[in-house]
Structures are given as C-alpha cells and as structure tokens.
Image (cartoon, rainbow, N blue to C red; front, side, top):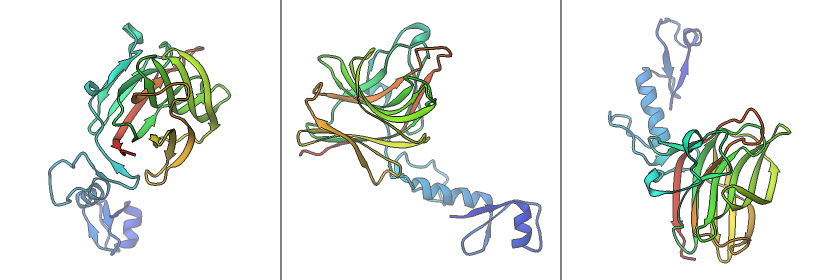
Length: 259
C-alpha cells in the first residue's frame, strides 16, 4: 500500500520538486495516484490492481470479512408504518440502508427465517445514533407466532450518553424490559452477532470483526423462542425534535452450525 504526501512534504522527499501530488511507496519509489488507488482497492477488497473491473462484492479488509447483504425482497417487514411515517430502504453496492421517520412508533424491522436450529448471524452495521432517548439500531430476533422481539444494538439516551443494549418488546411498538444497557463508545462501524449455541441465545459485538466479546447470554426460550432474525431501527419518538433513525448494513453472514 502507498502513502500520499502533499507538495510540501514531497519537496523534501523529492528535491527536484513537482507541481503534482505524488505517492511514495514503502520502498521510497514514486508512483502515480491511480496506482495508489488500485493498491488500496486490492488491500480493502482483494481486487487485482491491474484490472479495471469493479471489485468483487465479497473480500477481506482490516475489519474482518465482508459478505453481501441479502436483498430487501429476501426480508419481511415488521411495523413498516404508513404515509410519511413509513420506513424506507435503499440497496447499497454490497448492502442496504434502512430509515424510519422520527414520528414513527416503536421498532421497524426487516426479518427473515433463521438459518438453522443452531446458527451464527454476523453483520457489520453503521447506525446514525444521537444521544436521544429510544434512538437505536442494530440486529434483532423475532418470534413470528407472538410478534415478540429482542433487539440488540447501539442506543442513545437523553442524558447525552450512548449505550449498547439488548431490549425485550412484546410487539414492535411495546417495550417490555431491558436485558442489559451499558454505556458504550459511539462508533461509526460495529460488528454485531446473534448466535444460538446449545440451549443458549448469545449476543456479541466486535470492533475488528475477528474477536467477538459475548455481551449477553440467556436461555433460548427466555421471553420467547425466536424463529426469525433481522435488522431494526427505532427513531426518537418521545419529544421534539423527533429525529429520524437510519442504519446501513454493510455485510451479512449466516452460518448453520448444526450444533
């Protein structure tokens, strides 16, 4: 990979001077900016730097593995809303984005059938959370027969704090209780994981996509027995200004562990 230097630094590296922006590789050799971009693409996405084709939608980058997110059509809506309060989606190059109007009530979710009796579901998410009560976004479990939800993600609070929480909802618009809510640094990208291992449900997080920290473990039948998994957003809906809430899902991986 190469490092770009502005003209002032380049004048020191290259005494002959130049009006152009140069890049200097680790070996000290000058290359043009296009070569630098190609090397960065190869580093981030596993792309061949000599090819002019678009990079693959799956590859590796410094933050774990990147795998394509299923299309919106592969999910089922829960509490989508109507009119100006309707949740909307847009499909990104390798993922999807979900937005809910600030006047929306409760959690809006996109869910799909679990990949197996025992499983691991991992997603790289970016949530536009503000330190306002109820604002949150992330992953969720759902029991389709009762409509119950357990949501896991980053949340804001009115005390100008951010947290990582696991919350129980008797339905998409009715909060029941928190399993856990702890102060947590606001981060633009976070790997979240939902897992069933043996008889337990496990929620974990990771900053690098390789090392996951179990955040909460409970019996799989506690409160509900999920048969669906997905993503959710919950806008600030309690007081003015009622901010919209959005979530981008940049990677999605489902594994049927068969355990």
